[in-house]
Image (cartoon, rainbow, N blue to C red; front, side, top):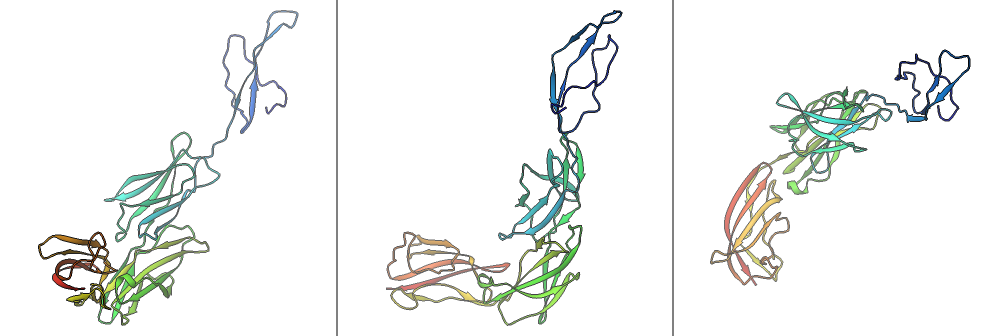
Length: 331
């Protein structure tokens, strides 16, 4: 064992030519040879075989494999971070999700990978996940606790907004608290600066007074007790829907040199426009009209002066409004 010299292991009768070594040392280099002894003789006559060896290993079954967190990432997609047991040996870690109350395997973590983004999961619904780990013999050896994402919902009532969210269940140590973040602006594309407005312990609801803004957005972050893991909810916005305004003319060489829309809760990033000349030919189209239209065609060349027609799809939160009209371009 480990080049420490040979020692007698065992002996058998001469008619047996197999042997099972049940005392193999872990993580060792082991060499064997067989010595045959002649029977019924006054002299010791032996014959020695060749030597052969094995490298023994040690495999520890997976245990305490955890989902570290389920969260909404910066792209507002649900991602799942896992935490394998570094002292265990795995052939596979499978990620399972309950679909119609039945567990379905959706992904297999390989190598040192420990992060997965579930692009098929709607972040406005509670998705439940768990792990099944297999040992080196490809047998199921460990099942983790269930984990879920946080889904935030808003209800507007008079001058208040009610926030409700489901509890977060993953961490063995439990949830320390929930932090409520809020951003407000004239329209949804500008509601980007989130600030903490409340820290709650184990409650899963909060009532916020409506502030004087067209758009108010929220999300929740849950913190693990005594550890740094976090889980972020979906982002939800309360949008005041009002009239949409736009100019009837633009002066390309003047101050009012571009065509755009204004109004309560408008999200120009998620809006689109198509512009046609007087013969009905499409000369310009664009998604995300936050910059407006500066009287150019698709080649970014200024158009001639005159009347042009447009159809626009204007987004106001969950509502889309189609507007058809005309715009006069003055050179």
